[in-house]
Length: 386
Image 1 (tube, rainbow, N blue to C red):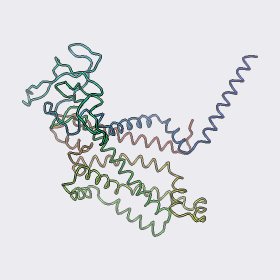
Image 2 (image 1 turned 60 degrees about the horizontal axis):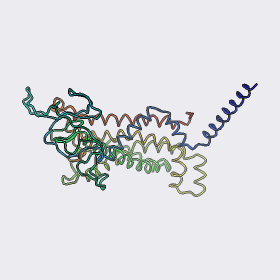
Image 3 (image 1 turned 135 degrees about the vertical axis):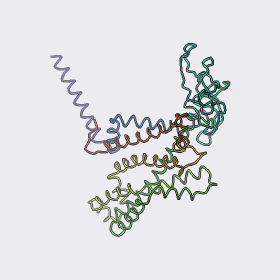
Image 4 (image 1 turned 90 degrees about the vertical axis):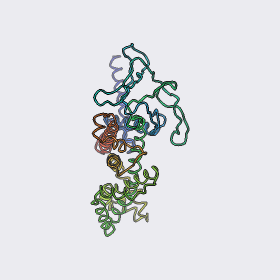
């Protein structure tokens, strides 16, 4: 009898918990439901975490990177990556370290090369005092996340150095900030233009829509590479790296809106005669308010998905243009600029670590693509959140 009573109590508690879950589900907002569904997409959550780490490393590049993007180590030019280790021929240590370096003559090329010196150890430290930089451009700091002790007679280069002795790891971290920020700002510019142009075309239709569609078609058929070649040639050589950066971002944004604008137009055309839109129009609401307050929110989740999917194309555009010399140029650092310096046969043969920034490009593009897939599934109104 007592067991039966306990079973009834357990059943009642389970039913009550299920009712609370259903009440929470049916009273949740659209964005809450999207977040619950997105959270269940493990691949998208992993991709978002990786992208978040890359973004944080780029934002705080001055702290994460051991050295500045143009700092040189003349004693370790074209040096190989120095991987931290815990054991060597002399034994093991609880603290990671790198071996010292010494200069030898390559028997094949007769070039002077730096090779590990197993008799010397340099222990890796955190929050090390190093060169003075400005965090976020205005906060002076002289502490870096990782490095060697200040009294060490050499520098640490996790991913080696280039032909000028610049640290590839530090330059890649700085390049991450540049490339991701260009992608974000460029997408935001194209997004605003797409909302305005697509919204006007979809709401008014008729002659206005026809004119806008013809302009859109003209922009879509313009050959991109010759266009960028002309724009790159038109940029004054005396422009600073900051001016070139903003010009590059603006150009990518101004030519990236047609696809999203057409999607917004098609959505607005399909709902412009719905009852709630007609009611708002009869109530005297202005077109801008009707579009912003009534029409766009009905498919906001799908706009966000398209927006996220646009990031990989913007990042690839910047990387490709900088790689062929039509985008950013040294001393600016971006993924494309770094890869441009590694496009020779000599770099492939002797310094393959210069291609490490390509891994960041692949990871960022895949991460945005997976996040877009996760958002697309989460925005599906027919899916259920448990």
